[in-house]
Length: 279
View (cartoon, rainbow, N blue to C red):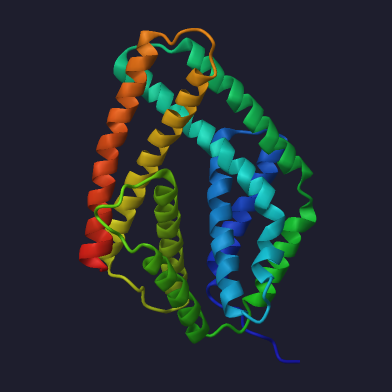
């Protein structure tokens, strides 16, 4: 019986999977927001990996859904937990910068955080061990006998699709969905580049382009955090029956002003990367 060779790209998967499973087991004992955020990040990698396998084994039309589908509800819950964590962090930073305290809003954030964390914990407890076992087994089997050409073709296809989606018009106003799409697209490209290198292929882009991608990714992360607290605070205040305190009016002005500055930077960096460098 001929033994099939496992692809080098499985090594990063094995490492990320092991770390994800360890985080999951730890969260099942006690929910902690920092570990929840780390697990969400690991799941992003695992989803990108199974998407890559799905492109290579394109004859198996539902492979990605089969492998990552069982994680979808958990992934969404962890994403919500990350969002409320970012909102809580942003509020703490704003209170430090303004020297003001926002007790009633802080209480609302704490209430929402407790509810969202409880939901995420329930989904962790409801996720059977076989989901993890099935993912590892299937990923291992589908990572066998992959040639560098297969990896090159699939990664190039996905990267080109992302770049085509990034056709950037400097006059376009960046909204939350565009920010989210660009941020997630950059994560995908960077992950795929690392998998290419693990497979013995050259990276698609130079180091300097990767530096620009990393810088833009960090900026978009800050933009999205700002967007989240503005959205959450505005909704929280609109739900109140009593008049809005003046300090909250000033707080919203401050957040909107920060958003305007971050948006200008994001537009400039997007234009530079997608039009000037990759255009």
